[in-house]
Length: 348
Image (cartoon, rainbow, N blue to C red):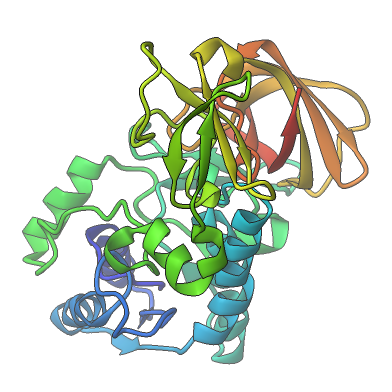
């Protein structure tokens, strides 16, 4: 059981323990604990997870995954920003660490299954294939974050809180007297001090923090910035310039170290190209697929036509969408079912 020290994974572990499973709680050591101590990383998170295991009465461990996390998540995070894209490190961590290296460790120690506190559900169809479904609590649904899971991972995974609401999870934690029952949810980058991505970039890629220009679409200089890589398409807050109207980041040019801001209508896109596309079923559609897509974690699913091509896909929206951000993920849905997804490479 992957235990972050939060209430969701803590309750998930206890539900499995109550159901009679032999549970090994695992707090994954991902970063140097001296550099951060919030979210799912650092001494306090480890202490909280350990306290829950002790309280419930199951075994606990802290496997060291710092090397794989640095290689598969942190290196990618820096490289994506270097290329002018805005990555989602949580998706990459789920793919390569929690359902990659962690699943391999489970096999090494003889565990039958791995479990997490994600708000998603699974089901097995009449054809024997596993399906990935949204969590029952739509406000906490995390299917976007684990859309890369395939048949191998789903056949070995349990998501004990996916069929309940967050309120029910907290209520269960209080009934059990868990020390994390009222612990706030973490919304920050686990590996960055205070969740500050800009500070992490400054420390690990200082060349991306060079001062540059903020310009309007015509090239007129409006002000300055402390590094184009700190900005993302669609950003409205923290621009540090005034245009006389509501302005958004409409282009980030890291090579030229320039940020372009303009009116919101310049953000509208009719479609996108995605790379690194995976399909939950393991079967690539052989023709255009009318479906729903999400282009951001908290965004609404909107109608689109998806056409697979090689290891990628071309996505045409039913109506123009704003803030299609390269580096983020596009995820395909059919009602509650996750079909697959990939990384946004470009928009049109």
